Image (tube, rainbow, N blue to C red; front, side, top):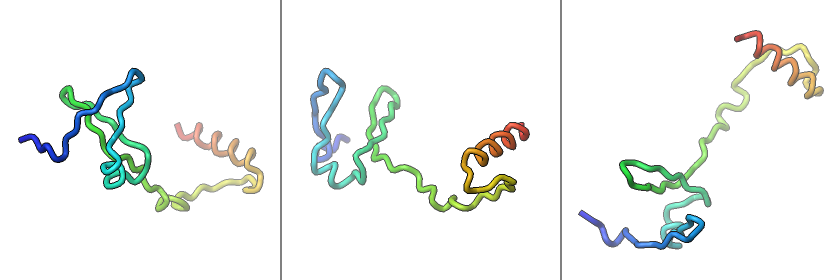
Length: 86
């Protein structure tokens, strides 16, 4: 059954843009980004929230010989160690 309270008809401009109603944006979006998904010929719009990866910070331990204050040497060593793993 079609829920007319949660349905609007919008025009798509010549650049492919649509405007989401302000009430919907205020109630359902935490950021200005949305995720679009096409399923069975329908376009679905979902709020986009980037993954919170902060719990991964500091969770990797790497044995490095280079001085950690020399980023270029550290990067080079990481690249060399990564290529040896393959």
